[in-house]
Length: 130
Image (cartoon, rainbow, N blue to C red):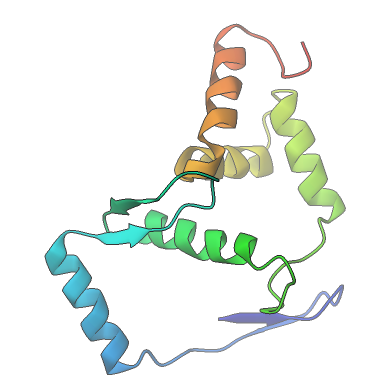
């Protein structure tokens, strides 16, 4: 796990021991074919998804989005390079950060409508503002 504070450019990475009970829960979920991913989309009751890196990341991100009061202290303000990545994605600028953001949009269910719009615009040779 990586720890960072505010605008400090330094961080610290530490290993975290995974409890044997947590391992048992994961093994049980794997044997059942997945786990219930609760949706953060209003009116969506969630779905059963396979247990893999992408669905675990979606689960973690969904949990962070649900923490509107930032009690977990995981919500951070957008930095200038985050904003630039969104602008690059919207204008079809080919940068590493916009490619990473596009991958995130493709992976997470909550972004599916936006991902579809971006794909349609790119297929038509347009940016999102056109």
